[in-house]
Length: 125
Image (cartoon, rainbow, N blue to C red; front, top):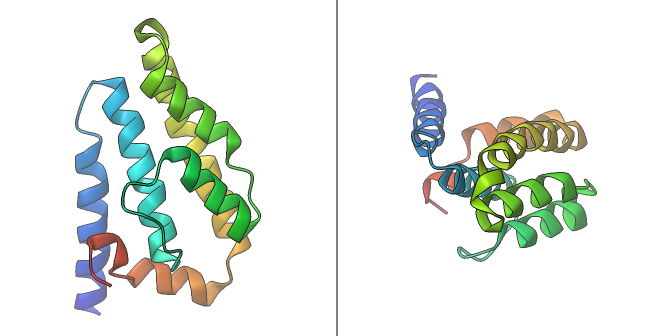
């Protein structure tokens, strides 16, 4: 049980550390990494350099969940005008939470537990 707790804690620390910035473009990038980690833990193999759009397409293709609101917000935060980047980064975080909720709803309990303890998002295959 301690090993499971250590894995979960490592994932949580890694995820939270990515958001320790005020730069909205980095926050949008952190959102993309968080989605990539979630998909990796669900055994969806993606290129390490996959774009947010490619991640959204993978979620739509393999788990039948529309990720376009998240993708739009994350791309706007990263590549849109600086004046709107903060609001779009905030929207990207909200859309990511909603997307992960919809993704979890598509998974059975075994897949959710397996994803929770998976080491793939920590770089272990």
